[in-house]
Length: 425
Image (cartoon, rainbow, N blue to C red; front, side):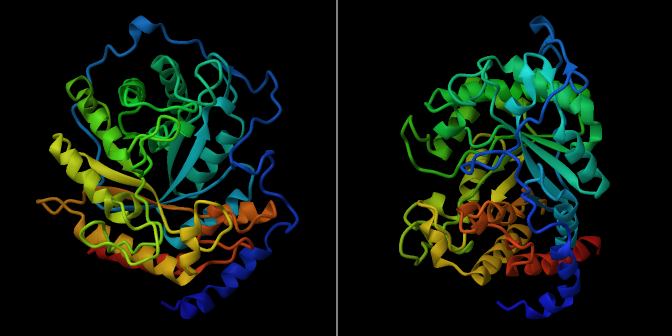
């Protein structure tokens, strides 16, 4: 696919955007190249908001909600990094591309310095700037403080302490937070303090239920998402539990108690170098490698949908909170990106959105995917500033390290405009 016409139309706009700010400014202020994440700034007592833990005997007494939220039309979102960067430029580009939502990951351990004491710092500015840009915000909460969790940032021992945190956050920001995804890829050992077992899904359901109750008690209009497991077939306590096994255990825990405690199921379908039209085993890809298991394919989301229906959860939407295709990079384990060009990336993203929009509907014609969040907007800018523009996270980006648009950005702009126009008819 070729996008030169759109590129010419936007040349002046992007020339100005690329020129904005100092080219020598490092948008990442935190140390460590292995992980792009927020860090806590210097703290003073003036910034502290002490919050006393809510007594345990008052938790969870409210009846579960009987009305679950769903979108009436497919929503378009993107994953962005908004901490300590040129946020106004990121949000301007988000609007130019036609995205309705942005997803920001929040590290709980960087906000809660001691039990019940929160330092919101940069998150205050992020929430305010996203709202001022007329973009809806999905917050994804990860990484417990060390005094609540085993290992390095795993889920907390006691669900109530995370309930306290999400309640304080929703109370503070009100309607400026539109959705909360409770944890990220909990079937991975790295997201679980270093180890994950078949018993872990039950612990996760208890955590989800606590957070759902606390959020809905404050603002019933906030979407609460069950976390997306990583798409994997690996079964090793030191690495992962297969995503379908993890979800099945979630859905059967305590006779399906999860039914009362989530609006939508988040999913992270893989893609490797495979077209979004392919799916193993019926229509396997022809790439050399990464094509012999369903988890290497975007359409694996259909397997998750089938599992939800089998467990009586077909009334809930799926939200795809990360999807995308890597391009050439130097990160071990992501070599499949070397099989794709930027034009391939654009083509696959457009094909994926079109498939979801046209085909992923229930018997009444309603979308069973409520929202799609592309991975990612601006990580190439961040990694480029760190001297590593070939990092795998950068390879998924739809911007170049100098902020100029890749073909996927331009293709998305046109597709979003067309689909939104169709929605108005």
